[in-house]
View 1 (cartoon, rainbow, N blue to C red):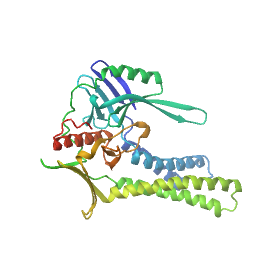
View 2 (tube, rainbow, N blue to C red; view 1 turned 135 degrees about the vertical axis):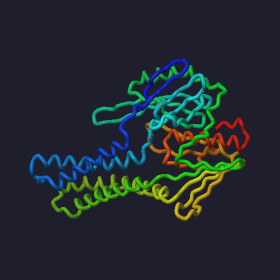
View 3 (cartoon, rainbow, N blue to C red; view 1 turned 180 degrees about the vertical axis):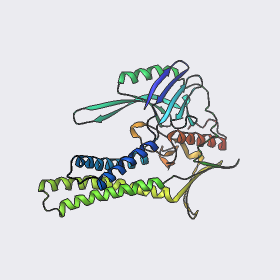
View 4 (tube, rainbow, N blue to C red; view 1 turned 60 degrees about the vertical axis):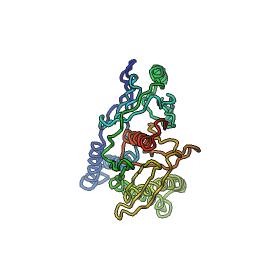
Length: 364
């Protein structure tokens, strides 16, 4: 999570600590899982000490590893690496943690306020509070840049930062010509086009593994309720409650995840902008047949926004918001991109619409 590294009248820098890479964690988890299988199949019987607790530990570790792989690798965002508040240039430069040369920009002129979000985590005997400093843009999007368990520390950081953020600076962010290589940029003077695909093969493997775990859980509950006659009545009640609560919740999550993943697996996506409208397309990857087409007049768009906050650390879409009703016109899911890359796309869309319409004071 981001921490304050330095502060001066010229720059304020927040940096995230770089943890273990996903590849390293995947290798480590796989090694533990394979070790558990080897111990179970080759080493002495379950009732032979000390192998019984070792085997149970490996079983439990393997179960939780599968859950971790499903949750963290499939749904969580990559956190930004650093936030550089440049008080002279009048912008916040947000760097990717995996590739610091990938940068997205938020202009001081776009900032509405700095504020604190209080996040609570409850345990059996206590509640731990985390204080998240974030900036909110005029379009409603938020970017979290510092976190601490000390409220006074975050309050002081914001109090020191506020006088340096002059929203009346007439600066503009660098031209966003460079976009992620996961996005294909096409087009001409008349029309600008973006093409992309959301990677879904590894996610499919995760969901299959999770499905087996889910079916195993349901099967165990049903056996305990209707087959194992020695199961006490009290235990059956507990199992039934778990089956109703967790079975339905996990089942809903599984169906929702599969539905979205199937879309990513079999479709490719595109955005096109000309002088009159923005169009969003979905195509079948195999046949190339158009499956969806939504278009909006540019003069009906109020804003295009993307949010990254740690307390809702799931992959969010880029939102196209209507001008009059402040409603979502379309959500653009680009799951293959990091938050910084999504910010680049947001800035590119805004910049391209300005160029196509010739409206230089377009304020989204």
